[in-house]
Length: 538
Image 1 (cartoon, rainbow, N blue to C red):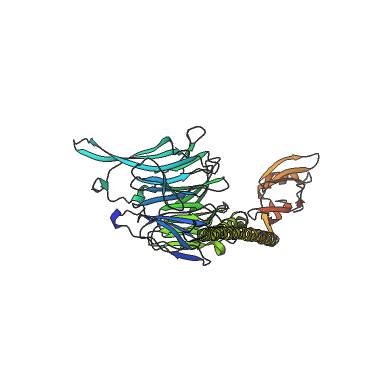
Image 2: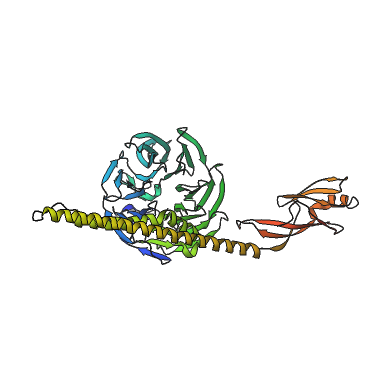
């Protein structure tokens, strides 16, 4: 992270919501955008900024804005979307009503509050923060040397009444300030100590991005830490779990994104390409991609299975601080120090997401949109027809107005019930068509992937003189070849030089190849032997 004096921070702009362009620049804030989050039904997006302002976006417009003040470091929707968790650098941490912005619950105030997250089952809340204490020692020359101790901790709360459960002490780090002003090291940005955590999908564990380069895993069942993921060389700034529960992604000051197998704690992919600190990582909702935001002014999209970069999204003119993926897969949202937030449409860069998006719409999206439209019409009817009886209004007129209102409410309910049914049918047709199209494209790729290739034998067993056969393994496929006894010794001595001619074809997931029509060539006599693995048909 670039070292900067806090009061010289650049200011960031933010606005709008997604439209059909590949990228949309949004504006509305006047400071560093530190956090972006989407509601679970993808109907709303929220942004938080160092300007002390929170904006909720709905239907491409600002639906609401709140100004609690301070440097707002994090905003997160609760799993039900009714509340928003807020952390402010000055130590404030609370829940607010997602519609009104009213504070519904406050948590213990701590200095340097950075992150809030919620377990998917709605039971737990985790809040990250740190504080500093001043210390000194006398060196060998008798001089007084001052230093500060940084205490990083995570407070755990129960959602039932906001009761504090436990405080996890994560790290105590001794540091010598280079230049202090009012007790703080002014060479440090508040982002230098970015400190985050996230829950697993099953809500059993909490992953904590540790400034000491590790990722700590806390178990709620065992009420203790059970494992550290190690592999980064510097501060880990961001962690995120995949929706399928199989992977953890981490972004670090060492400029790498790592993808971890949750079960083993081992790194399965290291994604390299960024040229500066990685501030934020997030999974696509189908768990196939990771996005990362970096001080190198880019957002990068990575394919998890191949470990390759799909796209480098350029447009920010400064550090990119935060990135998020919409739950329907349509958009990647990023915010940075250049006064801009970018909303990137995934339709072109990730065409495979179309089917996921259509399925999301069929199961979630159309309900959210229809409900919003219906509630808006019902609200208008209630305001017009269900007002208290007026002073100059007769009882008959009042009763007639109320009855008219009831009729209109029922008409609205019936209209949107039919609209929802029609949209469900339409979306299911779209899903079916996309599935068919995807299957046809996959079959075409498989047919066109057939190639002749040459391999080597991976392993050779002992010769069976009674059946004149060798058992051998090629590309994880084990079978037998019939080799006359007169040629068997020469084959045994030179098998590592033997060529294996065969055909290869992509398997159904288009990631790996299957091999068939396997013929092994004697390395000396050049005799060809057909390998029988019991399934020669592709």
